[in-house]
Image (cartoon, rainbow, N blue to C red; front, side, top):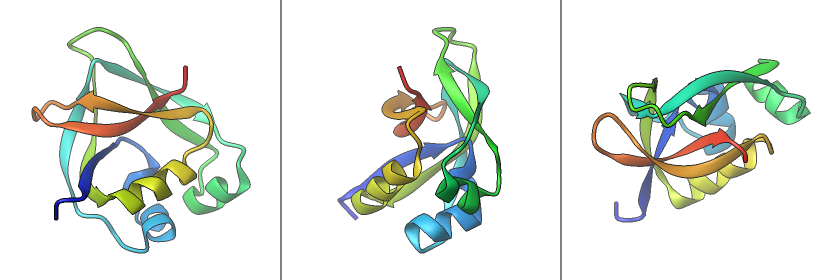
Length: 114
């Protein structure tokens, strides 16, 4: 599939209920890690996101610039349409960036908005 992209998730996009609500399917992925980032938490107030995730606080990552810092998660191969759906799901606290993974791949990931 030539129009697929890689999406790395360390949070609720790994949850089956969130995947079904946003993509209409369960995603198959593989473990990986985001390099040079540290994880924190953000309070979620968006009613739809709260309903889909069932969680009031979601993990959020920030670039640390420290090569040994890493955040574990899952890398998924998704369509451009599914990436647009993920963009709609993520609240304004997040922005999507291209980032390096421990596997040597690069993937889209949602990080703390600047």
